[in-house]
Amino acid sequence: PTPPPTMPPTHAPTEPFKFYPRYDQFTCRADGQHSEFEVHFYNTLEECCNHPWLQKTTCLILGAAFTNPPTTGPTTPKPVTSPPTHHPTSVSTSASTVSPTKAPTHTPTNAPIMTLTTGVPTFKPTSLPTTRPTNNPAIAPKGQIVEDFEFGLSSAFQWYNSKPYSWVADDTIAMSGALSMRNTIPPGGQTCTLSLTLNSETGGLITYGIRHDIFMPWSVLRIEDNGEIVETVAGHSGEPKWSVQSVTLDPGEHEVAWIIWRSNSDSLPVEELGQGLVWLDAIKYTPGLSFNFDLGVFDMNYVRFSGVGTWAIDDSQPANDDGLAAHSPKFLLPGEHSVMSITYDVPQPGGKITFGFVLGMGTFSFYIDGEKFKDSNTPSTKATTFSYSLTPGEHKFDWKYDAPSIPNLPLSMVWVDNIQIMPLLI
Image (tube, rainbow, N blue to C red):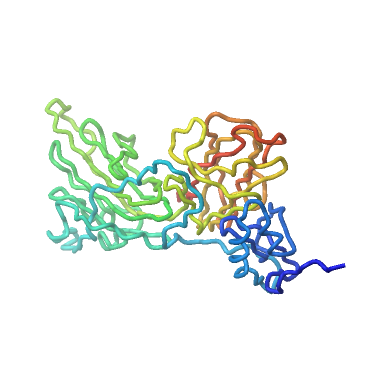
């Protein structure tokens, strides 16, 4: 009998590796770096390229370049621990309206220069712009950014300091070190503003130390992000004390502002409570990871797929009121599953992962480092939010969908949205 045809030696995997589908690369690999949920393995590239989710000719051409397996046993893919330096590659989208990222309406200059004269901090007039220039904010450096005001407003962030009612360095009160920043008291109906601007590619957390003696109706403090109020401070109890607060940032450009407004009403009580002063210190930006999928693409620096098919992004989520969402492949057959995975190195002192999901028919499971933390087989009509605290270090997150036992049921998918992996508030 005629022996069966064989593939060229370069198309045969070296033991113990077998070929498995890489749907995001439109081909197959034999490198031992498949997901623990992978169930489709083949002895040859040609057998793997016959998988119904792949186009055979394209798969064979691309696969020839990916069939040089490592010389050691299977290893865990090295996670990306820093923000990507390029735009993510589009994997799967559908025609839909993409919500633009809101950008600041103005951009601050670099830091004003501070000098100390007999213990009283002053600023050179040219360092206090009355309007913000139009240059784009720089992309935030990889890793944490810290501003402790020990040299006034340094170049750690891009700063805007309002004029004529400006923030000044204060060497009498500080949360850490010798200096903090304090507002001057504006006249009635006026404001005193300090803001920082940065472009966060991955999202993250701004933390800051704050101390104040604000009281309404005489004065109020607004903390804003891109012009939207994050928090309003209208009073306090007891003596002013330092506390640490935070602002969570989605990916994109941000202007975080601290604005003191002074009332100009003539009907205020004569005896004022507090002076309307705010002190800021120890401002830190720590990058995180955030996916709301509203750009319509997967960031392949972080996202991988395994099992059957590739996840997609569209606006098909039931009871959708939050733009686009990622969802598992359509038309999976009984016994098939698909997994979306993200690997991330959580910085000190740890973090928290949060996401929302909507399940149609089938079963949804969520894993952290191979351990199941959430599963559901109950269809839902609105998003369920899940969150879990994370220890520092590398973690792998898997969103797994198993098809129902009856094929072709409507809404046989899971939708996942608003994934955030954020550092803990220190």
